Image 1 (cartoon, rainbow, N blue to C red):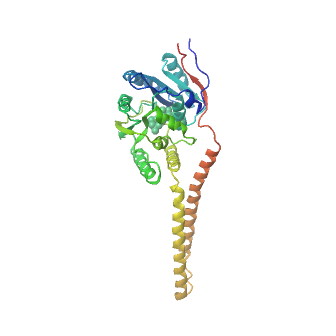
Image 2 (spheres, helix red, strand yellow):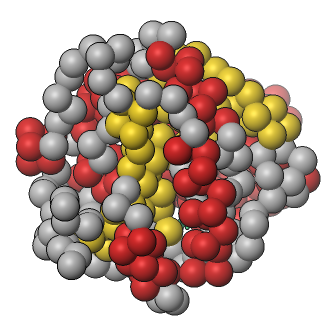
Image 3 (tube, rainbow, N blue to C red):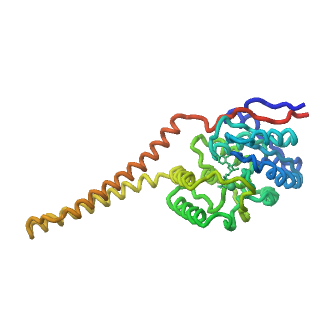
Length: 340
Ligand code: UDP
Ligand code: MG
């Protein structure tokens, strides 16, 4: 008979209760946790387990668990996941109370994963599971973080590649924390890195940035990103744009500071221009035309001010959201086969 544990430990509690027991890597089998967010992926859950389970079973000297986070799916995803959990004791399911977004779903899975190494992974198999044994091998060489970098992104549209490249360029130019280009969430993290990550209190979570922020000894391996096995991308252009803003404002205040400089430069220019106008009036007398330059200046400054206010609003909004101290996610129920 199957038993499920009800509810889940809160953030922090999991850190104390479910921690990795330590021990040397040689003397025991390592537990590898794959953390997978699912949002309306019923079409591909079967293909997912078929592809991933054999790869995980093939990793030498290790056990695995697959922590599936159901992020408020409205299709049959949860039922499929529970069925997978019934069939395979290494599959755990965390059902969130609604759709919290991929970042929150990943946070939930990472919080509850027990592995000595934790690997976030997309359900759509865009990241090839065959990379996982290579990651584990590098980790056993002594690295804390093994980044999987997309060697090429041919399966992404031209527009997505272009905007992604622009995002990384802008982000790394203006932020205090550099995020590696073309590295998604797909990476291996040691228990120590995961525990550090869990201590970060912010509830607006831009995971790629947080992953980079915690640091540790990092190495990279390259892979080719595939097309989705089925279903469709949950990230529209508009969602990605907002995600980019999230990233840019999460890791630095330069976008705020820039307005001080821009305002100063504009004001300085205005003073010079005023001096010029006074001189010209003194020399040539009153000049009636000038409507064009005035309206241009008014519109330009109005625009600059609105954008400036918008940027400040972005940060104020962020302070507001953080100040509420709401949890990142809420677990409705966790499913796990009882230990027999
Ligand atoms: N996902 C999620 N919650 C969401 C949106 C997406 O858990 O609100 C999951 C989705 O099921 C998938 C992963 O995040 O496992 C990546 O999503 P997707 O493949 O749509 O993103 P893309 O690869 O297009 O960036
Ligand atoms: Mg995808």
